[in-house]
Amino acid sequence: MRTIPVDTSAASVMVALPPQPKVKDRRTGERAMDAETGAALSTVDVMFAANGEVEILTVTVPETGVSADLVMGTPVAVTGLVARPWENEFNGQRRHGIAFRAVAVTSLVASASTTKAA
Image (cartoon, rainbow, N blue to C red):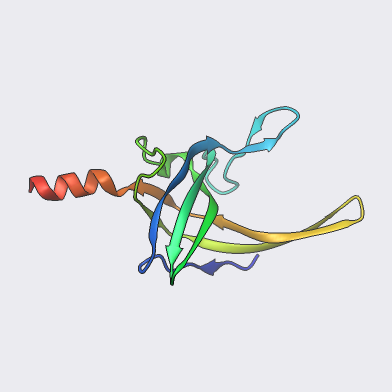
């Protein structure tokens, strides 16, 4: 599957909704797991502001890559962000979109206070 790297260096990114467990099957509540590592997956909604535009992105990230202190409005760093176009057909209807995946979503607040203390 094709992945497109997303450059976040010129963007302001902050948490729009705190991390939630990613569910594979809504009927059973089964948790989505990373196919390669077996890690549990979470989603984090982030506000991505760049080039005078703002978008809300839902980013899938392994649970191990999510800072524990993410609340609405927290400035974050998104490591290894990629976009993946997807398309499927269900009941004769074609759907398509872009899924976002990252290695980690970490708070910049902790790193800023650590820098000030140094």
